[in-house]
Length: 200
Image (cartoon, rainbow, N blue to C red; front, side):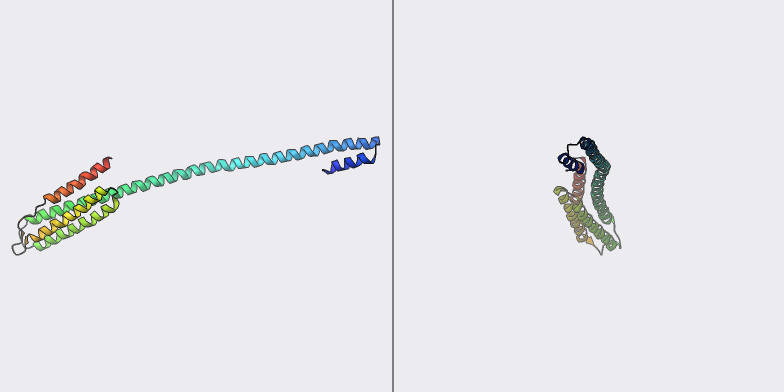
């Protein structure tokens, strides 16, 4: 019980004197004022707390939106980077295969003492094809494309072995000329599959 009410109750029990009654009435008015002031203070505190929470929440919304935008941007960048790496790996494989085909064709047309160095160039090109085929296989997600890349590397090795087998070092020439039809078909199959994959 508030102090003013407790005093008022005591005064009631002590006297019925009119002056005491006046004092009791004044005390009741003062008590009501104190209760009203306490209520207003509590309302003010609650209002300030709610306003503060709303301000904090309002400040957090832009931060969350910005964070979500940054996460989405990072995902797009990773996806674009992976696509670029895959495309480059395929181009590198096709480039190495084309270089090997040219080296074999040039060696087949050559007749002279430098046949040994020509065969060495062919072997280096075949190694590049195998390296880029392995890289492309790691980048490619479709099983069919990985198989075509691996097949291209195997056919490149077969072509290199055939060129070495048909080379007459004493005569300085490749005889008979190696058949590159199978290798050409493998290059075209891989190229066509990559183009079709990009159109999906």
